[in-house]
Image (cartoon, rainbow, N blue to C red; front, top):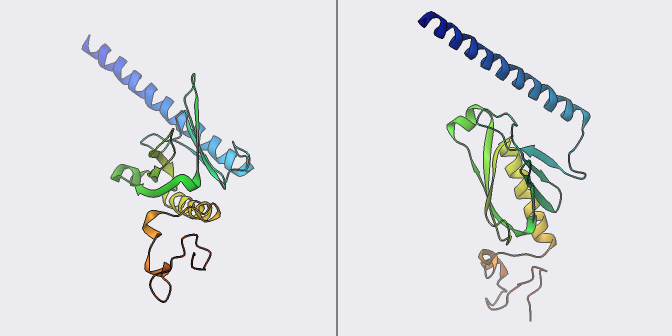
Length: 178
Protein backbone atom coordinates (compact mmCIF):
# COMPACT_ATOMS: atom_id res chain seq x y z
CA UNK A 1 0.00 0.00 0.00
CA UNK A 2 2.81 2.41 0.93
CA UNK A 3 4.59 1.51 -2.34
CA UNK A 4 1.53 2.58 -4.34
CA UNK A 5 1.27 5.89 -2.51
CA UNK A 6 4.98 6.64 -3.00
CA UNK A 7 4.79 5.62 -6.67
CA UNK A 8 1.75 7.85 -7.21
CA UNK A 9 3.46 10.75 -5.43
CA UNK A 10 6.60 10.26 -7.54
CA UNK A 11 4.58 10.19 -10.78
CA UNK A 12 2.73 13.36 -9.70
CA UNK A 13 6.01 15.12 -8.85
CA UNK A 14 7.58 14.15 -12.18
CA UNK A 15 4.48 15.41 -14.03
CA UNK A 16 4.65 18.77 -12.22
CA UNK A 17 8.36 19.15 -13.04
CA UNK A 18 7.80 18.26 -16.72
CA UNK A 19 4.93 20.76 -17.00
CA UNK A 20 7.08 23.43 -15.36
CA UNK A 21 9.98 22.79 -17.75
CA UNK A 22 7.65 22.92 -20.77
CA UNK A 23 6.18 26.21 -19.54
CA UNK A 24 9.66 27.70 -19.10
CA UNK A 25 10.73 26.61 -22.59
CA UNK A 26 7.56 28.04 -24.18
CA UNK A 27 8.02 31.33 -22.28
CA UNK A 28 11.65 31.66 -23.37
CA UNK A 29 10.81 30.89 -27.01
CA UNK A 30 7.91 33.38 -27.01
CA UNK A 31 10.03 36.17 -25.50
CA UNK A 32 12.90 35.49 -27.92
CA UNK A 33 10.58 35.55 -30.96
CA UNK A 34 8.88 38.77 -29.80
CA UNK A 35 12.22 40.50 -29.28
CA UNK A 36 13.61 39.23 -32.61
CA UNK A 37 10.58 40.57 -34.48
CA UNK A 38 10.99 43.99 -32.87
CA UNK A 39 7.29 43.96 -32.07
CA UNK A 40 6.24 46.31 -29.28
CA UNK A 41 3.08 45.94 -27.24
CA UNK A 42 2.64 49.71 -27.01
CA UNK A 43 3.33 51.96 -30.01
CA UNK A 44 6.20 54.41 -29.45
CA UNK A 45 7.52 52.70 -26.32
CA UNK A 46 11.26 52.71 -25.67
CA UNK A 47 11.08 50.03 -22.96
CA UNK A 48 8.60 47.28 -22.09
CA UNK A 49 8.56 44.42 -19.62
CA UNK A 50 6.30 42.38 -17.41
CA UNK A 51 6.42 41.80 -13.70
CA UNK A 52 8.30 38.54 -13.29
CA UNK A 53 8.10 35.82 -10.66
CA UNK A 54 11.01 35.04 -8.34
CA UNK A 55 12.61 32.86 -11.06
CA UNK A 56 12.66 35.72 -13.55
CA UNK A 57 9.83 34.32 -15.70
CA UNK A 58 7.16 36.75 -17.01
CA UNK A 59 4.13 34.88 -15.63
CA UNK A 60 2.11 37.87 -14.53
CA UNK A 61 -0.73 40.11 -15.61
CA UNK A 62 1.25 43.26 -14.77
CA UNK A 63 2.81 45.03 -17.76
CA UNK A 64 5.15 48.00 -17.77
CA UNK A 65 6.09 50.34 -20.61
CA UNK A 66 7.91 53.64 -21.01
CA UNK A 67 7.87 56.22 -23.77
CA UNK A 68 9.61 59.59 -23.99
CA UNK A 69 7.07 61.34 -21.73
CA UNK A 70 5.17 58.76 -19.66
CA UNK A 71 5.40 55.51 -17.74
CA UNK A 72 2.46 53.10 -18.19
CA UNK A 73 1.35 50.43 -15.73
CA UNK A 74 -1.31 47.85 -16.66
CA UNK A 75 -2.52 45.41 -13.98
CA UNK A 76 -5.09 42.65 -13.89
CA UNK A 77 -6.71 39.98 -16.05
CA UNK A 78 -10.47 40.09 -15.61
CA UNK A 79 -10.58 43.58 -14.18
CA UNK A 80 -7.74 45.65 -15.62
CA UNK A 81 -6.41 48.93 -14.25
CA UNK A 82 -4.39 51.26 -16.48
CA UNK A 83 -2.18 53.89 -14.81
CA UNK A 84 0.18 56.37 -16.34
CA UNK A 85 2.61 58.82 -14.79
CA UNK A 86 4.25 61.73 -16.56
CA UNK A 87 8.00 61.41 -16.13
CA UNK A 88 8.49 64.95 -14.85
CA UNK A 89 6.36 64.02 -11.81
CA UNK A 90 8.91 61.40 -10.74
CA UNK A 91 11.46 62.64 -8.22
CA UNK A 92 13.64 59.66 -7.26
CA UNK A 93 14.55 56.24 -8.68
CA UNK A 94 16.12 53.56 -6.48
CA UNK A 95 17.22 50.09 -7.61
CA UNK A 96 16.66 47.26 -5.10
CA UNK A 97 18.09 43.79 -5.76
CA UNK A 98 17.86 40.95 -3.24
CA UNK A 99 20.20 37.96 -3.42
CA UNK A 100 17.47 35.92 -5.17
CA UNK A 101 16.87 38.72 -7.69
CA UNK A 102 20.61 38.93 -8.42
CA UNK A 103 20.73 35.16 -9.00
CA UNK A 104 17.96 35.38 -11.62
CA UNK A 105 19.05 38.65 -13.24
CA UNK A 106 16.10 40.78 -12.14
CA UNK A 107 15.55 43.79 -9.88
CA UNK A 108 12.92 46.17 -8.52
CA UNK A 109 12.79 49.93 -9.09
CA UNK A 110 11.29 52.05 -6.30
CA UNK A 111 10.04 55.33 -7.72
CA UNK A 112 8.97 58.38 -5.73
CA UNK A 113 6.32 60.34 -7.59
CA UNK A 114 4.06 63.32 -7.05
CA UNK A 115 1.31 61.67 -9.13
CA UNK A 116 -2.03 61.89 -7.29
CA UNK A 117 -3.51 58.51 -8.26
CA UNK A 118 -0.42 56.31 -8.18
CA UNK A 119 1.88 58.11 -5.71
CA UNK A 120 5.12 56.29 -4.88
CA UNK A 121 5.29 52.88 -6.56
CA UNK A 122 7.51 49.92 -7.43
CA UNK A 123 8.33 48.34 -10.76
CA UNK A 124 8.76 44.81 -9.52
CA UNK A 125 11.10 42.06 -10.80
CA UNK A 126 12.20 43.43 -14.17
CA UNK A 127 15.01 42.18 -16.39
CA UNK A 128 18.12 44.29 -16.98
CA UNK A 129 17.16 46.49 -14.02
CA UNK A 130 20.43 48.46 -13.89
CA UNK A 131 20.07 49.61 -17.51
CA UNK A 132 16.37 50.38 -16.98
CA UNK A 133 17.16 52.48 -13.89
CA UNK A 134 19.62 54.56 -15.92
CA UNK A 135 17.08 54.89 -18.75
CA UNK A 136 14.45 56.13 -16.29
CA UNK A 137 16.89 58.58 -14.68
CA UNK A 138 17.88 60.00 -18.07
CA UNK A 139 14.29 60.34 -19.36
CA UNK A 140 13.04 61.82 -16.07
CA UNK A 141 15.78 64.46 -16.13
CA UNK A 142 15.03 65.29 -19.79
CA UNK A 143 11.32 65.74 -19.04
CA UNK A 144 11.94 67.79 -15.90
CA UNK A 145 14.17 70.14 -17.92
CA UNK A 146 11.71 70.30 -20.84
CA UNK A 147 8.82 71.13 -18.48
CA UNK A 148 10.96 73.48 -16.35
CA UNK A 149 10.33 71.48 -13.19
CA UNK A 150 12.91 72.16 -10.51
CA UNK A 151 13.19 70.51 -7.13
CA UNK A 152 13.57 72.40 -3.88
CA UNK A 153 17.11 71.10 -3.45
CA UNK A 154 18.32 73.07 -6.50
CA UNK A 155 16.58 76.32 -5.59
CA UNK A 156 18.95 78.71 -3.90
CA UNK A 157 22.05 76.64 -4.55
CA UNK A 158 25.42 78.48 -4.80
CA UNK A 159 25.29 78.16 -8.60
CA UNK A 160 22.19 80.40 -8.64
CA UNK A 161 23.89 83.28 -6.81
CA UNK A 162 25.10 86.27 -8.76
CA UNK A 163 28.51 87.82 -8.03
CA UNK A 164 27.09 89.87 -5.14
CA UNK A 165 25.38 86.83 -3.62
CA UNK A 166 21.91 88.36 -3.82
CA UNK A 167 20.43 87.62 -7.26
CA UNK A 168 18.87 84.26 -8.09
CA UNK A 169 18.25 82.48 -11.35
CA UNK A 170 14.99 80.74 -10.35
CA UNK A 171 13.82 79.85 -13.87
CA UNK A 172 17.16 78.37 -14.99
CA UNK A 173 17.56 80.57 -18.09
CA UNK A 174 21.09 81.65 -17.10
CA UNK A 175 20.09 85.22 -16.27
CA UNK A 176 19.35 86.54 -12.76
CA UNK A 177 15.65 87.14 -12.16
CA UNK A 178 14.50 90.67 -11.38
